[in-house]
Image (cartoon, rainbow, N blue to C red; front, side, top):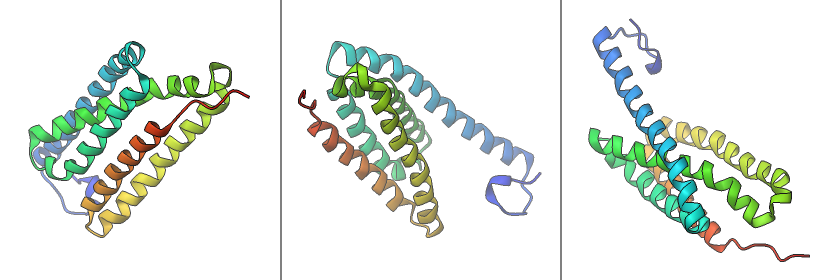
Length: 168
């Protein structure tokens, strides 16, 4: 059996390949469960408290976990914890971004403005993996994690400075 993710032609045992597959599926399950749990929890927190404060909390914890992830990934229980927190934050973002967009620009204009928010998310989803791959090719994954974490803290500053525009 060939292990396709390595891009190599060496053969690996079925046990090793299945073990790697199980580990990947376990991390994916933790991320998915975190994502789903946070979508409900963050939506509720955003209603009862401040949406802006919820996003600031999520982006701050996301930045810290992403920067620390390079050291957390070496220990299985910390890998699962980090993956769960990352999934939790992604679920919360998807629950709160539309409501913050509506709060900022008004529900009348959410259709026009949320597309731009989602476009920015999509661009990050393209540029981030490309940057990570380029840095990985240079054996510099720590820099990729640090850049992503720093960008989360930049997002904290942006959302903290965000105010509703003045009515014309």
